[in-house]
Length: 63
Picture 1: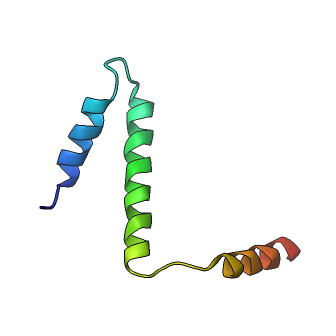
Picture 2: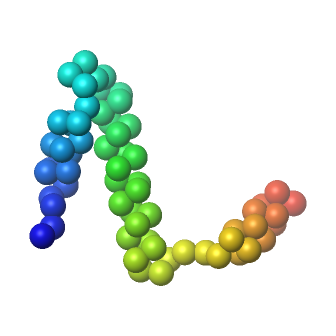
Picture 3: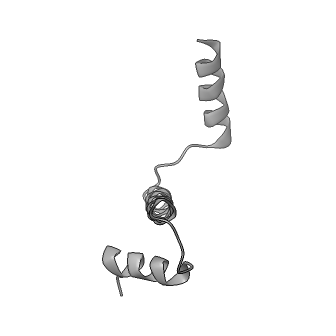
């Protein structure tokens, strides 16, 4: 059963304290969305091995 984005946001809000700020709500939704995207990338095989990441980082730092 698939949970809609609206239901996910409601659940996130229910888990937060009553005095939560708009900024904290926005950040929590953003963070949740990014984690979901990362998990989908893993499911789709869109990942790099640690060695590949280290090589790319070394190239970026040398530029």
